[in-house]
Image (cartoon, rainbow, N blue to C red):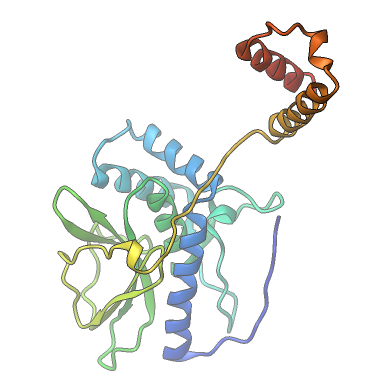
Length: 252
């Protein structure tokens, strides 16, 4: 369902720092959305199913670059689109382009949903160090280093323009893990348990089947109390009950 939020947003450096945190929030949420997961899996499969982290991250990068274009935000505004609205659809609307925020949200969400640690990276190219651009990075366990990825430029995969300042935000906890001129690429991803008391559970089921299963469970409970199971025979196996559930689910 499409949801639009409109609110005042600070300009300049304060707005950029706030935007980085908001990008991290979007990625933390969208990385566990089944629609993001589906898109990412399809991208990796289309690339020949690479096994390495670099191969998977490159497959997502190539698919995103092929499907989406870079476009600026509306005048005097900060518009952010979720990965779902970019990669799938929101009430029938699919955005085929966006600025650095949107493309980074989509890229990091798709890489993160594949089980690869990711981070939001803010860059400044000014002497003042004021953040003005956002990109992403993923952790490659084979080389034990972070690989920055900018989906808005035409440099080769894994290369970025040299910044005067970097600000890194870890996903999914949103903690700032580095803020200086250049962040060491070998810094290990933080232990999530230090920032989050629990992880995330995501259950994906067919809603019709799930509802029918609940109805069948309630029926069995009610039938047990009234000895209604005698209609089926007390020797009815669990496997047979499961089969009945499946058949009833298909007939809904």
